[in-house]
Amino acid sequence: MGSGRRIERWCFWVVVWAVLAGLVMPAAQASASLNGLTEARAGELHELLTPDPEAVWRTIPWMTSVLEAQREALEKGRPIFIWAMDGHPLGCV
Image 1 (cartoon, one colour):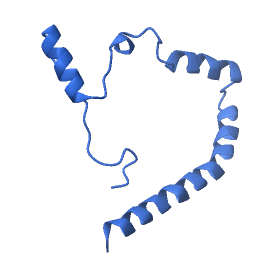
Image 2: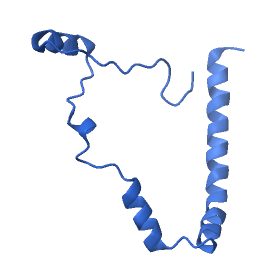
Image 3: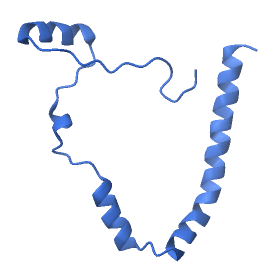
């Protein structure tokens, strides 16, 4: 079986699970209200879990070009932090 066929099959199951999750979500939301989760409490939790827009990592001038980052690092005498991955971001490899 070719890798293209595996990708199609994997993506098909992702869609199936997404559809099933959409059917289950209304039931989950109904049970959440029965467990004492109110709209006010949900708002509090959302605010608590939302990252701070002033967080230090947001002030880093992230670059998408390794060559440009290397040039700038050499000029400023600073190290380079590289975040790298291999494959499709959704795991369809």
